[in-house]
Length: 150
Image (cartoon, rainbow, N blue to C red):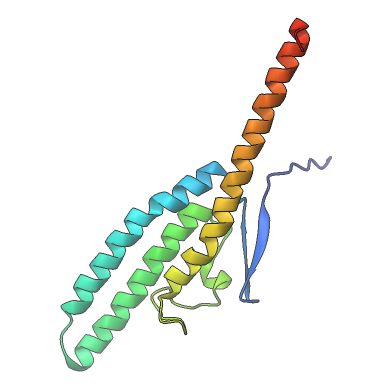
């Protein structure tokens, strides 16, 4: 069998030296999925806050709160898998850290992750737009040359 290698633009990013996240930052479909997910994330955050506020006091509340955070973590990781593809296991990528957890900077881990990814995806979108523009210019120049009006 012959090997066929296609440049899909996929890049690898080491996350905290523990896991590897693979995706094409210039993929417009990924870009749209990532930024469209903001609405879903906001809704999940609001739901988490409302449910957390309604937790009972004491051990029962603590246990229910931990279950709530585990559910949130699973739902966010499923959303990230939908965005970045099933080959990216966010438990492995993040070393098993719960996305509802709080980092040393006081922000939730999911927020830190999204903030780290945003400039990568914005740069990828810029590269995509430049490549599209370059292709359009080259096509226009070729068409002019073919008509003899270069």
